[in-house]
Amino acid sequence: EYIYKIHGIKYLEEKLKKKLEVLEVKIVPGDLAENPYVLVDMGMVAANAIESNIQDNSIIGITGGGTMVAVAKGITKPTKCNNITVVPARGGIGREVEKQANTITAEMARRLKCQYQLLHASDTLGQQALESVLKDPEIQKVTDIIKSVNLLVFGIGRADKMAERRELPKPVIDKLKGLKAVAEAFGYYFTREGEIVYNMQTIGISFKDFERISTVIGVAGGKNKAEAIVAVSKLKKSMILVTDEAAAVEILQKY
Ligand code: F6P
Image (cartoon, rainbow, N blue to C red; front, side, top):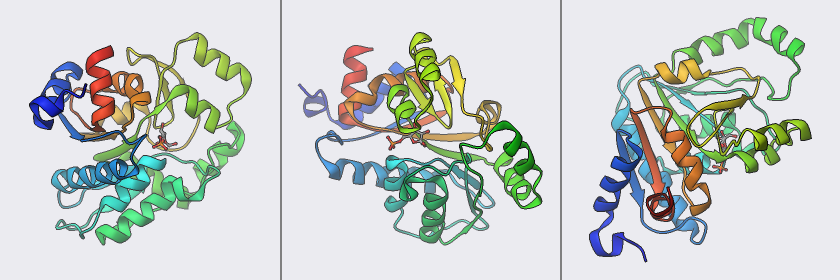
């Protein structure tokens, strides 16, 4: 039975925050796997968290995925802050244009009425191609801005699902399984304890950058992402988590 029905959502937020040992937890009622409006709500809550955490001159880094599409759509008012820039946190031109970080960056900036920069570099470049792309002055301009991101908003995925979505080669998939990867975020794959087991060779923020960034907001919901959320919460104590009730209850009961 859903705990919040008895104690309220605030109670659930407090409990989850203690359990995960993160800075802040925001929970929207319901299960996004069953009710699409829950994702809409989660997007709005994340959008509010963005507005309350930016300051003048903030550089917002964002990742791709369906959850982040909802976060962009959750922004309904221009920002009150000045000189805000949105950039994709990692390179990556996947199959679905709507879910790419570049597309979400542009949409977010349009809604916030702020500046943005795009990154024109594919996720699937080989090492050599990647090295020459990195020397391109236009790309360098953007990678410099990415290195100065001070607010990161990112989606969290299951390692198995993300490996599948990215069509990683079989040996890599086997490696991920063998090393017990359960979570994926900003190109890195993690175990439940938050140990890195693999990362995509792409342009953009590195794990070191992630550790340095002052404010990070992770957004993910649905019961099936519970373990991935647990893993990613281990990465940074100052993290703000936006999730749904289904994931929250699953984490409290199972982990
Ligand atoms: O591919 C970008 C990304 O943000 C991943 O880092 C993350 O695992 C995934 O998308 C989440 O996707 P979704 O919100 O569609 O579940």
